[in-house]
Amino acid sequence: MPLVTMKEVLKESIEGKYAVGAFDSLDRVFTEAIINAAEKKGVPVILMVVPPCIEGPDSERFMEYVVTRCRESSVPVAVHLDHSPSFENCARGIHLGCTSVMFDGSALPYEENVAITKKVVEMAHAAGVTVEAEIGHVSGHEGNMLDGNIADESAFTTVEEAMQFYQDTQVDCLAVAIGTVHGVYKGEPHLDLDRLQAIRDELPIPVVIHGGSGLKEKDYKELVAHGANKINFFTTMTLAASEAVRKLLAEHDKLTMTDIIEVGQKAAEDIVSEHIEIFGTKPLTK
Ligand SMILES: [Zn+2]
Image (cartoon, rainbow, N blue to C red; front, side):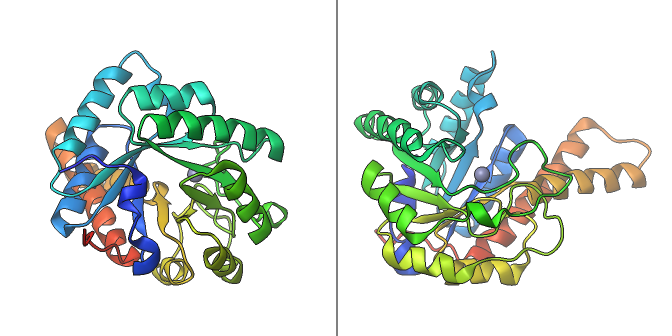
């Protein structure tokens, strides 16, 4: 089945009151872990690649593998380009087979964010690809993944901004800032669930939460209950995989590279499965 757009993957999530997990993969190990987990659960999934995956000399080969693996999957998968910084980069992602792109203009002045997002939407829709954008700003993707970040309340998304941005751009789903951060949390997270619910109640398109790592199970369940439809997840997965490898190395003197990869992949797959369950993802009914 199928490689599908993110709009397709998320089309029943609002009514069904669940979220679909969006997991980053920068390599073959995580790609297999993510798709295997979704196949075993029998639910749709979003596999995210990041701008460096589509830029380097190896990018065409890597993306060909990712797209082929997803196309051959037994569950619907969207290949999504996460946090693309420019129109040109989005175009490259589409050229290499992404079925969805995120243009992140959240650090730009509003008018500029709208202007570029609109151009991306026009191009992507012409190519049968769907678009995510961000309004408000989720802290922490400035390269501080492991040291910890705190949420900037002044950059939280308002209902008015979300609606205006949607009307101005016609994006297919919208990332909002309500208290999550990218990378690991510094201190206790405070999620503005009322704000999330208010956005969900107004906005006709799926709502996306970035910076999902580091939350507790009950936090995720609250996010889903208050209207999150796509949850981005990476840091916890990569930390779990490296921790499993560290433990394996500490316990054995002799190991092959295959042993190490297998253990890392299994740990990533387990954590993806666990979060698919927590997010309440359901199979598509049609
Ligand atoms: Zn993000």
